[in-house]
Length: 331
Image (tube, rainbow, N blue to C red; front, side, top):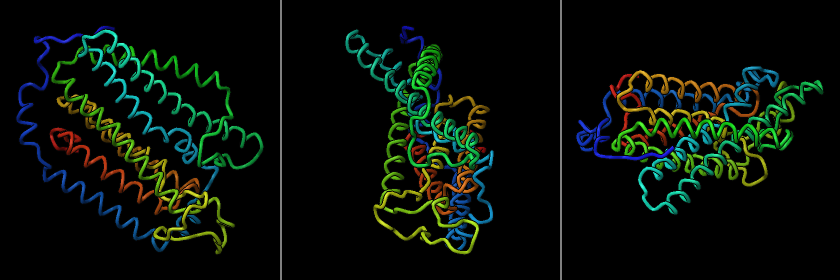
């Protein structure tokens, strides 16, 4: 899977690449979309400020299939972005470095990071899945999975086997895909990859720190979710301090929105795929947020604040990269 570059590969975004870097600006269409989405977020937060409990009481159902699917399999956006970024960086290093010892060490290190992300992804997915199956077997609501941290309730050999098989196959696919890219394409992708890792780190750190500081009880941790009294309820703007509870903001929603970042890995001349990835990312963000309220793991304000923060972070990252979500500026 040797990747080599030469002058003949200087194609791709060569024409207009310098213009892209010097004349990049936020379009009027993008400003309109951002303001509309931000406005929806603000309205949602305003509604949540007064009606958080009412919304939960109206929609919460821990047996919801919709809620359980997204609880089990939408919490992996951070790992997916980091995995893709690690693969791009690994094969960029393989392609650029001539010192074989350093090349093998650095490429191997990034590929191990990619494997680590697959193991983490499967830890979450398998933990939630086995918890759900165990709940069904015991006749309790299937959504009573561990919402704060993945627990090892699955065969470890299963996780490692799936991770290694997926890692080998996907690494081979990435190597072959990137081998066809021009040097200019690779220069663009390496920026997207490095910024992607930074975006994941900032998102996870910010949301994680806020969870700890706010100490907010989750809806399913209330004394009752069907009556008029929720003894442990606090509004989103009230900080409880460190108490072991971490409802605010929503981590699942954060990961759901991070799928939107994958649109920047799409070649800038492939408009059709860019549109599909943007639609996919928006759908994952919105549906994950809705599912967390539905299953009673979060309040409306939890998912709203997470959506606003991560959405703005991804938009800021796109400005740093110098890439539009869809290059013809149409969503």
